[in-house]
Image (cartoon, rainbow, N blue to C red; front, side, top):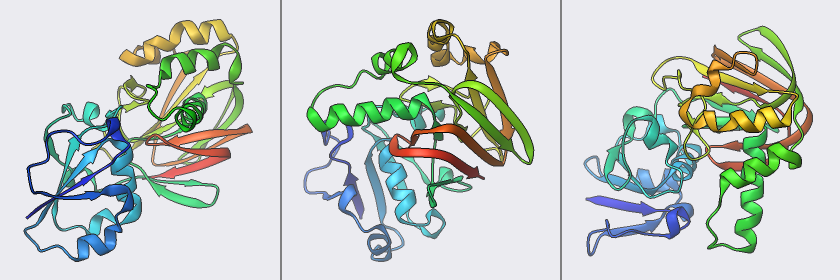
Length: 270
């Protein structure tokens, strides 16, 4: 039997993919350990949603314990995971091969697995502002680019950053962004780590920094094509397995699009 689990917040609900009479369950209300323990060996599961739907799954149950085939039917707003594996939404994509060797981020004393990125800085600020808009106007389409521009111009203050990767110490002034990337994409289409291979045994830290707000803003669009890494005086690319990032002042982080407020540091390990 095939079971369909959907995220009601992903792209405003369910699409027409669901066969008539299919078993349909709200993914956000599912106890995954109990759900999978009740499946037969040949049962299959389809997640209907996006990056946040995958993130919820991998943080509710150890992916290594799942024996059934799980598919993603992309129905989210960002779909960074699907972009990274060169797949399109609105088709079933087997997830199991990508649920192994997942990184773990530690934030405010709690551990989180993630499928795409653990992002610290203006990306977290954008998610924080988007959450505020959704709380007031749940059906309003979020313009993340407009939020980022506002942040770069005046609303977000860059931090001093201390970064440690596999024991190597770095220090950066005027840091806007310092994520630990498992995939290439974050933020709904930004190719933040164009050289990252999610199938490798490494993560990539991308440090985006500049004292000039205008220069930061002018070069920000290059992130969507991954060309920002050519600006070697503004962008540092640091691969590694064990990462520790600390900011001079707390701000929001986002993990696969899920926001955590008031964070001063994080660790990520693969």
